[in-house]
Length: 259
Ligand SMILES: O=C(O)CCC(=O)C(=O)O
Ligand SMILES: [Fe+2]
Image (tube, helix red, strand yellow):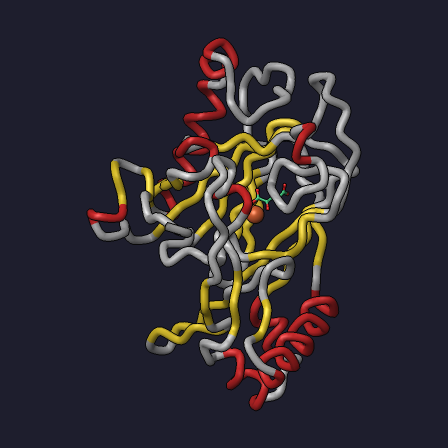
């Protein structure tokens, strides 16, 4: 629930793992089979989108260990734990699904995740009611600030109710409560999350689809080698509905922050 795993996908030729998320034109052209596959799966779930601030708006993002981000809270980290998060928790047009296509697995890199309903089951109604209030703050991901953009405090509720549909927004590294009541509810939520965090190791040829409104994800630390054999995951973000036309240019969401 909250994640779907497709296994043993035939991905074609995979060049050595690059040391940056930006591919050379040779690397790019050699990956045509993988690209066709990830788009085919993406379109089953909605519209592939990207963000202008993140990896230059490239639609297929390369999640590879990058030397200068080893210890950061960013998908290209390695030596530190990537804390559990909703993808782009701060964003009004966050993705509905995160697709992770593993082109080269690393048995020591463990993806973590926790499902909203497993978390909810452990919380009292009084705590759940606080989580529905807009009394939490988060910040702008550093993946959105690689050109020196300013951080910004964003107010949000952890549980959002649209009609009968509930969604969950959380970022362990950045979220805080605005008062004692919300900080206490956040503390209890953290404990509940710890109790139901699960692990999955992506193998070469696995494609994991995460429901971003129902499941938070992260990653345990792993050792990068920077010799072409590192873990390589391609990521596509998908929305069920396209944002308003003044917030998107082609497939790139242009919403600005910190200005
Ligand atoms: O590398 C992973 O398993 C997950 C990284 C992550 O959070 C992401 O790519 O959105
Ligand atoms: Fe993520």
